[in-house]
Image 1 (cartoon, one colour):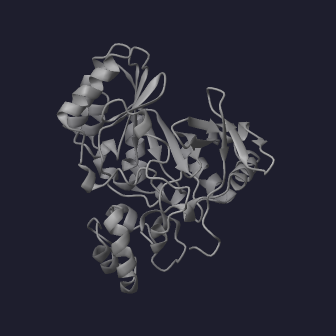
Image 2 (cartoon, helix red, strand yellow; image 1 turned 180 degrees about the vertical axis):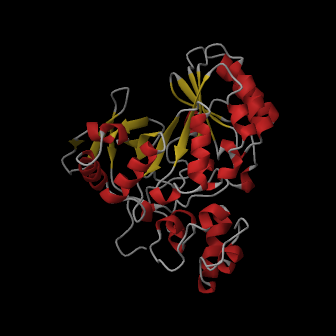
Image 3 (cartoon, one colour; image 1 turned 90 degrees about the vertical axis):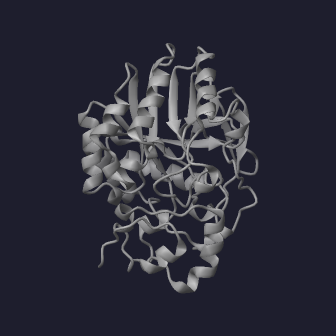
Length: 356
């Protein structure tokens, strides 16, 4: 198999790499016109082109299924815009905010819940004026204890820019925690340089890294080295995983992933139920399937390796731990209670079984 040496950012690139067929070009051009496409060489070379159900390909290679939108899907499925007082800020919880400082990623996940907000067409980074306004908002709200830097992928920024952002947030006395959410150590590990690590550590604040990974096969070779560089530098890592049909929706795969994370000194943190992003129904499991997987996982691994299975309620009502909620209405539809005591019905919104 010939190694792929350049980033794949178009349907022609994918055809040339033999990751999709020329017969799919028409439908996939329609997909790429709406949603960004990018695979780094690291990810592209993990794919087995002879395996029709390869879990890495399923996460990153576009398919025509993305053109089908479920009636309950939405462009802003968890309500970021409803809780955005200034550009770049999402203030959903009293003690923490998201700071979305980049709109691009080194790869584009086909199930991304911000898929209509990210990609080169949305601008690459938060402007200097918008960043200043975002930091001013944080400074003006003393209840904000933690800033979660996200996007897009904030590790796409240069070390110089990361140092500048770190410095600006470090000047806010009531901010104590900086948490960076990223896929870079797994998908583009060479970006985890000494300069990047120094920029992350250029603060008296406590810094955490939230690592997004969904399958143990992502945690090989240079990805392991990048994770080790971060941990050895004193930066604690937690993981975020999305429960994805056809990728990790069996207990053996989840067990292997969570064990491998702990072996790499990454604490499993969240297992996310799939959000209602457009064109992603073929990735979602049912809530019942997710609960059953967590029950099976709990029987097989240490508590140290168990993530919390969560649902981000549509409408900006926040995350709820699924296993702690067991209510249902008279039709058997799940009812979840948010942190303010409000009840929300949540119906499964999965693709029909014959959708690939």
